[in-house]
Image (cartoon, rainbow, N blue to C red):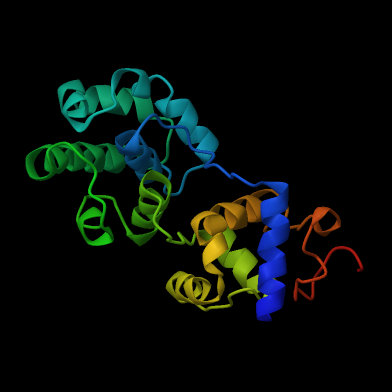
Length: 212
């Protein structure tokens, strides 16, 4: 995609949603980290349902340790892989208390040392909690980036690196939110809603469901 088209692409998405927000519900940096960790292979809606009551009583890693793993499991047992996720969340809380004074670290290196935290989770936390210009590539962003020709790549890391190169600085902070929402609600996996797409004329996808 040409540079001018990239600018137009994000200008349109920004005009429609100037301040995009994550669909995950959280109360602070720590609960955001927990929510994103739990969201792996799960829907944001499912995570929100599971954490609604949990985050009323837990908003600090020390409180998570005091809650205990059995009580945590009772809250998140509707989420896939809840047993392993509960173990990761408890170990994460222990490390945060012991090594970080109960605070969420602000570097990718330190975040990725935490149990259950990969590059994507770290990028989400760095972006949303700390306003860093990262791009957390999930299945939605990978699909949109490849379909549209915005940032094609064979792996999510390749797509991330391409996005970091082609997305203008003025759009970088919210870029991954716009792309996630676009992929979730318009550029869907099985049947994209091309008739509703605000960037259809910029898109290189050959399988569009409507003619331009």
